[in-house]
Amino acid sequence: MPPSLINRFSEYQYRWIKRAGKQLLRNFGEFQSRHSLVSTEPFIAKETFAWTGDLESCWETIRSDADFVLKHPEQIPAFHQMSEDQKRISKGDNWKVFAFYVFGERIEENCQLCPDTAQALDKIENLQNAFFSILAPHYHIPAHKGPTRAIIRVHLGLIIPTERDKCWLRVEDQFATWEAGKCLVFDDSYEHEVHNETDERRVVLFLDFDRPMDRWGSFVNGVIIRLLKGSKYVKHPLKNLAAWNKERRDTPAAN
Image (tube, rainbow, N blue to C red):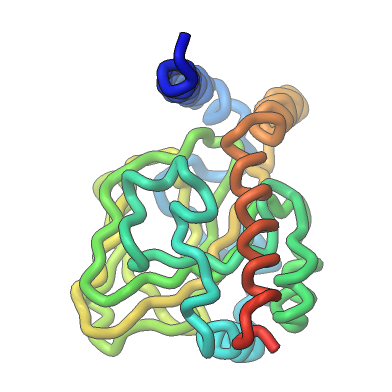
């Protein structure tokens, strides 16, 4: 078989496995809801997690780290450049991400560039993903669902457009807007989308952490997270980030 056909078959195989895997993970949703120790509604009260208050209290220093990173936006990858699995919802340079953690793997080089943010993240237990999420003006992140209810998502508002009502998040049938220095907590396994209909960019600190579960729920979620960590869904972004950071080190602007 010619190499081009082998590559196409391999890509088709991966897409099929990815779709089947996502469906399998979502089939656990009802089980996870029964064993969750916190709300399974689309949005969750931030007070459920005491550490969100600590995060809000140091938001200005985290914002300073974001400002530092944004001095060289060309050195920040678009989401689909970090993770090819996001290419349906990330187009061009409209959604950039500066990663600190990818499914529990600490990106040391990025953490060193943003020490205050790294210090705040070190205090969060069971953290899986963390990055600055930078959304361009007039960009729409299409409706999509996260792969599993095993994690919960938090957005800490850092740079929020003046016209807040024109920059919003929908989770299932509920809507919310961001506020600088405040956390939004939600379940990304529900369908969700983002609209920025303003002339300004929106920047949040994006976090995923383990959903608090009872004993059986924790066991099942632990298996799910381990399977994800062993898949291309996680390995590809880590490989891409390493390559991206190497290229950044080699460019004059990085010095």
